[in-house]
Image (cartoon, rainbow, N blue to C red; front, side, top):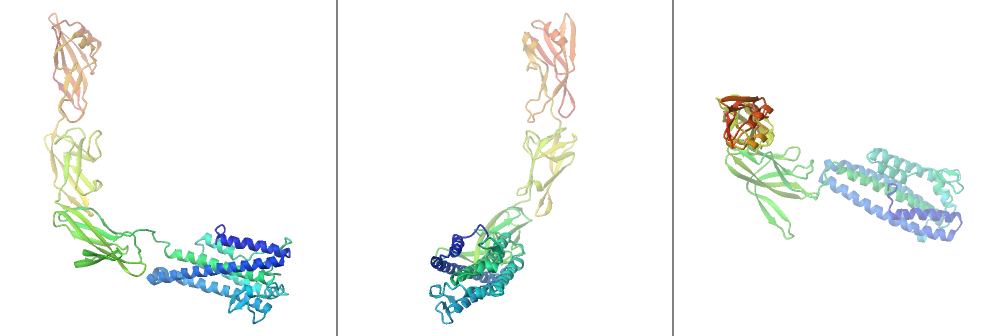
Length: 546
């Protein structure tokens, strides 16, 4: 396993080996060999666990390749290459253990049962010379050196030919687990891997060290197998549920147009094509509570594209809600066929368009009129509009509902709004809507919020100016008074003063100050600027001072 991810058992074995090596250096022979025997038995259990785990992974490769040779076949081939190479190195190490035991105990030793080591039955477990003769030799040219070369070749092949840079953590694990780097001798000097690992050991210690190498071989085999197994589904989406799905371009179509929908499995394998059927099906509840489905009566099968999706097309001929259903059949991981039901509804309507002014049923000259334009079942961004006798644009008018603004150009002729919409990729035009064009009505000029009647002199003097009010009109528009004249009669003469804004001037206020009870205050020549930019002449205001 990768560094930092060792199992508790692996950590225990490593620590025990270090402790036992130190005990050998102190010549605590009896205790050391007993402890090494216990470690050997632990290693045998670890090896058995690795073999069982690896065999399960090989079965998984067999199953995946049987289900989908295209997807899993190549990874299975590589997995069995790893098995062959791992077995070769493992058996070579086993041959070394057998040779050492037979050379020490004799050919008829009880320490071997076939190719299996029975560590408790080895008689000369403390023999010091034989392991070094077999592994090192007087000239440092015996089988430990061949073992190192074999491990190096195996490690390099796994990293370069199998992993190929696709997983750094697995590469690091293999490099560390199967390392044959030099080590430090008890005196602190550097020793080659062969001498540092296998020289001058009693038989029991040499067997334990070789077993540890075998564990490392199986450990690396497991790491690589798990990496290869992950590659089978590396490009797949992970999901916990499967359901039949129908995805329509719209749930509303107009009579004469085509309804179209994609029918597919929501979580699917692109290397496996489903079968998709449209029609009635029968549902059966099994004894275990599961459900199975099968098509009945007349039904059709959809053509499936390279994405595993079937395209369902049907011309809309009848107005109202239309429903269709069917099954999607897919091969399950165990090779059986599983059916998933689906049902979908859509509405068919007559071709129509809705265009409505949001203020009133006319368009007013010189301003933006808020307009709603909609086509049932069609997104607003797929709607286009144009206008005669003026212009129309997409955009709201502040303070009003509507996504369009229409501005007519001339009075005396109607304005037509023409609408088209993109439906199922085609542009459809609708009959035009005509609107009357009117001028914005004139406002009413008011002084002291009055147009006529009696007004107290002190109230008249307190007024800041004259204001234009647009009464009983849906649009909230503002008129600006640009001019008015205050006129009075005094001693038989007309006196007047003019303001060029909506504010009363000091001269006008002096005229009002000079009035007595019963005299007339006339505000005439009133001019106001309309929102459309025109100037309107407004009726006079006649008040009596009381």
